[in-house]
Structure formats: structure tokens, C-alpha cells
Amino acid sequence: MRKTALITGVTGQDGSYLAELLLAKGYQVHGLIRRSSSFNTERIDHIYQDPQTPERDLVLHHADLSDGVALTSLLHRIAPDEVYNLGAQSHVRVSFDAPLYTGDVTGMGALRLLEAVRASGIETRIYQASSSEMFGATPPPQNERTPFHPRSPYGCAKVFAYWTTVNYREAYGMHATNGILFNHESPRRGETFVTRKITRAVARIQAGLQQHLYLGNLDAVRDWGYAPEYVEAMWRMLQQDEPDDYVVATGQAHSVREFCQEAFAAVGMDWTDHVRYDPKYDRPSEVDALIGDASKAERKLGWKPAVTFRELTAIMVRADVGALTAQLAGSAVRVDR
Ligand code: NDP
Ligand code: GDR
Image (cartoon, rainbow, N blue to C red; front, side, top):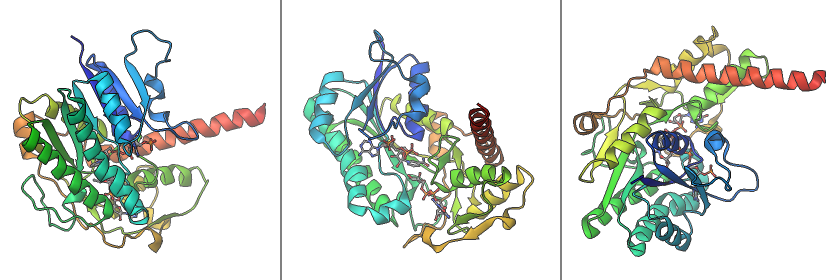
């Protein structure tokens, strides 16, 4: 029998890579998308199938994590073998501006989904996208036994979702698993997260379209991995007989400053000529350092990252330079016509 999966957040960075991975494994993938006034499916357009296609591999459904009734009827209808909850208001800085919304979607949204699974009476396995942001102020290295000390409304919402997932596992015997993932990036990373903001700016500065890049705290230290490798870990977690919680990380630490240095150097530029400070990007309470210890994931899932920090930076810079070059060539063609 062909396996089926539901992915919330399928239009996001991770959702798009996970959908590709599951399709390659022969799954039928159902994706939850939310209604927006303009197209929001850019990351999955290459795997999109017209609704008229018979026996579609990828089926999209309109729903929202704020709508528990819609989630229940959707789950009842498709009864997937696996559910991946990747949907969230996922931007930490934005969560200070929209704390209640973030709490509702990122925290309560996970509870609504778990409750929808319970209420619909289906047998399924659930993955909750937990985050290293839950560790917040607790010093590194962080692993599955490290106490949480979140530093943002986003981090608090993720802690709520984490414990709700554990509770549904303990109370109802659900196969519900938390993947505690450290930062992971790619050319599909949202443009306002720091890595992508930097690599996009590198391309634009090199092309002469802008001169400066404005950033906040350059001293923050993160453990940056490569997103396609991290969605493989999510899938492996749900293939285990028993549900559990796993940290996924590289164990390698770099500062935002180092990311700038590496990204600008990739095209032969000196970052200090272009990067400027703007306090508007500072957070009311910051997470200074996140460095993960993923030895449990290696031991139990056989998962190990391969892409290094330098390779990740190069992949992202190359993609942004390539995309901009193509875009400029396209607009030149239009002007010529
Ligand atoms: P993105 O921000 O790229 O994607 C978030 C997804 O959630 C998008 O598809 C978005 O839809 C969707 N979404 C937002 N609000 C709602 C809502 N109200 N109802 C339904 N869907 C909604 O995040 P990533 O792909 O980077 O991350 C995936 C998950 O993993 C998130 O939960 C994130 O918090 C978590 N995480 C991410 C890490 C990382 O480093 N990337 C690390 C640890 C955890 P739309 O496209 O319409 O905006
Ligand atoms: P983070 O990612 O908060 O770790 O959350 P982000 O890239 O936003 O910030 C990383 C660090 O860079 C500093 N920083 C800036 N950040 C942004 N976005 N813009 C700036 O201009 C800037 N200047 C400095 C930040 O202060 C921070 O210290 C990401 C998200 O994907 C979450 O959903 C996920 O849970 C965590 O990673 C793990």
C-alpha cells in the first residue's frame, strides 16, 4: 500500500524539501496551504500538479492552523499515515511584534492539530517541528536533556507545542515525536532570516544594485545546517517503532559576523566595506549561542550532517548570484523588446 502524509507548512522552506523527499519515496503527499491574496506556492510550483490530474501525487488543501474544525475534517477525510506539523509563524523577531498571533499559530496550532488527530479517531504518526529556540538562554552545548529557557514569544510558543506533543504521547499513546532542530538554511530560506538576507545582499551589492546591508547583532552564535539534510532526519524519526524526541544539529558554531565574512569573501568582497548596524534588527531579548549535540540522532537514526558551514554559505551565495543574474538578463530582454 502506498503511504500518505500530510504536511502543514508545505509552502515553506522545510515543507518544500520534505514534500520532494516523500514524493521520491513514493508517498502521496497532502499539503496544507493557507489562503493568500497572491500566490504563495513558489517553493512547490515545480512539483505542483493540476487538480484535474488523476491520482495526484501532491494534493493541496486550503486550511489554517487557527481553524481546528477544518483540521479535524481534513484529517478525517485523508487519514494520512504520517503528519508533519511544520506550519508556524516562524520568525523570532516578528514574534515580538505579533506575540498573540505567534502564540496562537505556533503554539495553539500544534495543540489543534493533535486534538484533531485524536478527535478524528485516525491512527497516524505525528512530527512536531520543535526548535533550538526553546533552549534560549541555557548555555551550549544543548541536547535532549537541556532545560528550556525561551527568550521570545516564538520560543515560548514552541515550548508549549513541545510539551503538548509529549503530553499527547503520554496521555493517549500517540506516536507523536518532537524534532528539536537547530537553524538550517538553503537557497529556499525566507529572505528575512539572517543567512538569506546576507547572501541576497551579497548578490545585489556585487551587481551594483545596493551598497550597504543593515544588520542587528553580529555576535549571535548559531549552529547552521543544510535544510535538505534536516528533512531526512524528520522522516527517519517517524520510521522508528517508538515515538521520541531528538536534537538535530551540526555541532559547529559560527557567529553572524563569520557568516558575513564567508559570504562576502565567496565573491571576493570585504564584508566590512558593506555591512552596517541598524538597532531595529535587535531583539528585546536575544539568544546568544545555540550549539547542538545531535549524538542521539546519530546513534538512533543513523543521521549525520555532511554539508559544512563553508559549503552551505557557498551554495546560498551561488544560488542568489545565479537567480539575480537570470532575473537581470530577463529584464534586459524585456527592455530590448
Ligand atoms: P517557513 O517560515 O519557511 O515556513 C512556515 C510555513 O508555515 C509556511 O508554509 C507558512 O505558509 C506556514 N504557515 C504560517 N502560518 C500558518 C497558519 N496560520 N496556518 C497554516 N500554515 C501556516 O519555516 P521553515 O520551513 O524554515 O520551518 C518549518 C518549521 O520548523 C516551522 O515550524 C519552524 O518554526 C520550525 N523550525 C525551523 C527551523 C529552521 O532553522 N528553519 C529550526 C527549528 C524549527 P505561507 O507560505 O503561506 O507563509
Ligand atoms: P533565528 O534566525 O532567530 O535563529 O530563528 P534568524 O536568522 O532570524 O536570526 C539569527 C541571528 O541573527 C541575528 N541577526 C539578525 N537576524 C535577522 N533575521 N535579521 C537581521 O538583520 C539580523 N542581524 C542579526 C539575530 O538577532 C539572531 O541572533 C531561526 C528560525 O528559523 C526559527 O523558526 C527557528 O526555530 C530557529 O532558527 C532555530
